[in-house]
Length: 262
Image (cartoon, rainbow, N blue to C red):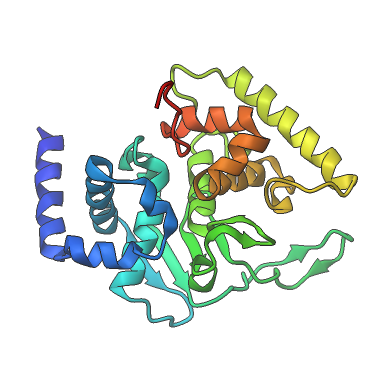
């Protein structure tokens, strides 16, 4: 009964918000990933985007004046990973803070050389364990399959992957498994991929994703996730086992399965 009432109330709020399909299409027209979603999937993603905007709160960072089109684009990028999972996977947080460019967190920072600095370096995105998602609009505009050091980049998907990861024991690269998945297999395959890429990195061999992935296990999952959606063909070619597990986790197949005889 309560679920039915909440759904009715949310439908009213979506209608009152007043966004149209045309506005949504215009906002996401320059994002190539959207070419993958057509027909019923595209309709479902649009509906989820509108519901996301009803459930979440967008806040200006540093006085940045964002527009409705920006919110529609950010919300769509946020919904792509959970299209087959559902908006409930984002129920544990509410606020998105949008800065015009990179932002500097007001907290101490310890650099690799052990020196503690008064403030952290500038960031393009951040996800708090029990708090908001913070994003740089400038970095969102640099989204693409070859946008960061010629590697895939999507700061929205990256930070939202952290939020999914945090649902189980913090951002450690091990999000909640579905019933048909095995946590042991996830650990073994991701660890093997991590170890191989670490060896390649130290031997100055080319990597299939941005080397920021090698910072921590949590960053590894987040970078793999943005690569999975922005450059899935490369991931499937160079990291096929990780690609397969991400297909299972996100319940999506970004690279169409070849059909014999077609």
